[in-house]
Length: 120
Image 1 (cartoon, helix red, strand yellow):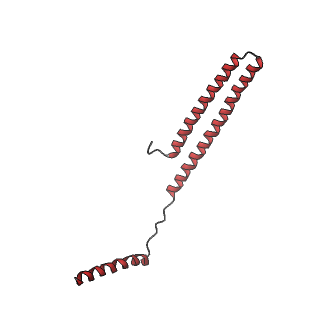
Image 2 (cartoon, helix red, strand yellow):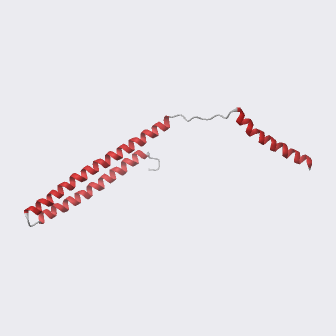
Image 3 (cartoon, one colour):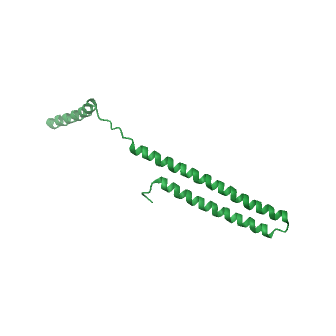
């Protein structure tokens, strides 16, 4: 996974989150359905069944939004990486002045060293 593209990693993480979210929603739905079966009154049982149904609807909507957001982020990242890879990097060439300006201090230093050696 060290060399995997980040857009693939984003999609994998979203898939894991989606699976976890739906698993928890199903557990909660089953709990409400169990409470509905144990309920003594008809109204209470219906209320628990409605809660179970609403839980699944809300979880499904949240999972879809999560997946859509992750896909958008992964697509955006992949697109930006393609653009960055295809854009040529402007290499700044040193001008003649810059080259000579850097060479002059070096030449001066060499001249000073040579004079120092001769003086000894």
